Image 1 (cartoon, one colour):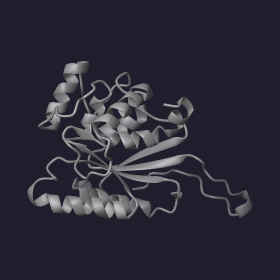
Image 2: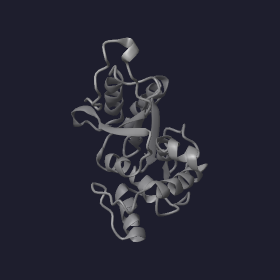
Image 3: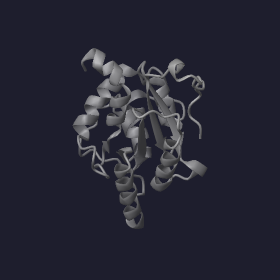
Image 4: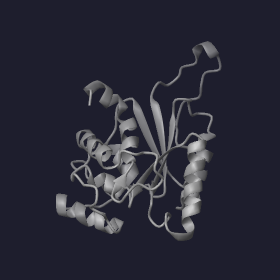
Length: 213
């Protein structure tokens, strides 16, 4: 699961050079939309790498195990960040709930950041174009996608359009996300809700610090 392609350090310590860009590693169940999204929305000195859970498993536990494995890579620096990007999906229902809560508690205890979307990451994408209000519940990801098409005309999460997602629109979405889901510690935000704004705010820290947003 190598994410980095770096030149080896020189043998002589006095000649060693260090990178100063922050790396954010995002581990998620479904990489299609997040991976494409962070290729469109990025800051100069913050690099985001998206990784899927190992073996194609999509449970929150599998996402955490993959993040643990990646964090052992000695190439990562102390200032790098590891995020779990999760959807509530059916993981917060019935017999899955206890495992879901335990996974998030373990992730927090081990220093991983967690961003949960209810019902799914697509809601975060929708906030770039629609000021979704609390109480406007979505029964499924399909309903979120349908709303996206109503607002913007088209939506394909496997092939996001550059004119639909850029830094300026992301800054607007961050403001909307903070208002909609101010609590980033709740393991199951209200529907609709997404904590992805906190992740994107970190990814755009360089832009935000320069613009005073």
